[in-house]
Image (cartoon, rainbow, N blue to C red):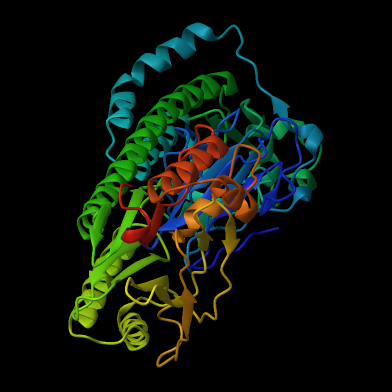
Amino acid sequence: MPAVLQPGTKSFVAGRSTGANLRIDHPSISRQHFSIGAINGKWTLSDLGSRHGTRLNGTLLKPRQPVALRNGDRIGVIHWTLRVDVGDQVPESMTIAPDSDVDSAAVQVMESTAARSDSQRMLELLIAASVSIYSGGAEAACAEQVVRACVEGTQCERALVVRSDPGAQHVTVIAEWPKGSSRIRPLSRTLIRAALAGRPVCVRDDFASSPSQSMIGSGANEAVCVPIASGSAIDTCLYLDEFVGRVDFDQVLSFAHALGRWCGVAFARLQQSDMEERQRDLLEELNSARQVQERMMGAQSGRKNGVMWKMVSLPGEVVAGDIFATHVSPDGIGLSLCLGDVSGKGLGPGLLMAAMTAHLDASLSAGVAPLKAVRDLSDFVCARAVAGQFATLVMANIDATLRRARVVDAGHSYLRLVDQSGAVRTVGLSGGVPLGVVEGFEYELNDMPLAKGDRLVIFSDGVEEQRNAEGEMLGSARVTAALVGSRSCAEDVDRLMNCLKQHASGIKYADDVTIASAALEADYPSA
């Protein structure tokens, strides 16, 4: 059954775990085998360090290195192949004959015979065509060289290179010769399905006992189907049918099989080049986004207006657009700290994060009150973000004179209060919807008194939502337990980072991680 992913989907995980979005219950499948997500408006595929690996178009992926997905891509996992249809694009397909098109007993596995010397001679004649196939600049160009050579060298009426799902229910024509020959008659699903098992197969006229057993009911009683292997999984075939006069099928086999092998080598080379190009493009975007993100982040530590803070921010597997900023009040009393996260991953969210940081800084510098500043920022995101894009944010305005924190929460809520003894409590906030969801939304101000030694610990969702090798999220309880007994801002940050590192156990963080702790400087004069 197809799985449909909509824009804004945070992560789609396939694996053996009961919590996987797509569960494949087989002992060879890892609990979390691969994931699909969106980066900068592009769907991406990542192998999650699975035991037996994940293949894209026959090429084995490197663990935890996302690769852009395109329409028609095939995801290979052990014995399963999944086809990717992106957006409204549907791969061009053709009519497939039903299973009754040929008696399965008529499909025979072909073996090479004593006519090997003739086959060798024909193979030598194919050297020039093979060079042209291998040097082809695109998959369709390589395939066209193959089908043209088949028609010229075997006297078949038509030749096609086709790609199919395992059951041959959906077939895509990559190349055909003569042009338009796919409309002559439908292909034999039985023959294609047999070839996908990895061996050349044929149907000959002398196998059929009567015209009614013609392979596809339109006079074609002879056909050959040769698998084209470009990876561990076979989903592409070379299909020839209706030969002129009597032909030596052993010679046809050698000829077509040699072309199929060259084609497979060329396809594998092109697929590897395509994979590398996709990764380069994606990494360039991610590096650009990370540079923007790093430049817009506030200082990692400091003391201003009686408030001190410590912060750390690390990029995840891909850039997600975390926000952290500090702002000194125009009246010189107190400090505002902001931490949030832009939805999505890649350059677009990174640039939106930068624009939001600049907008918020301009508002607070002009003396705009925190509530109005957050509401204006939400309207700013509403007007400029792409459909479905939003951001979460928590702003804490800390007044060192009044010993109070005024907190505005816009759908974030990742916050703890740690006292001087190391006791931890979760702060219940009257929050609101994320920024960019409802224009003109009125947020609420949460007034929190700060006892001596209280520290406000704020972090991004990448902390609690990081999964381990078993697919378990770090979660709220582990975050709280990690902070118990902590005695300073620096220790708060170190404890959470160590907890996250141990939980991930070598797995690269799936999302950006930002952790900040703030306290009144008078309570920790030597910290």
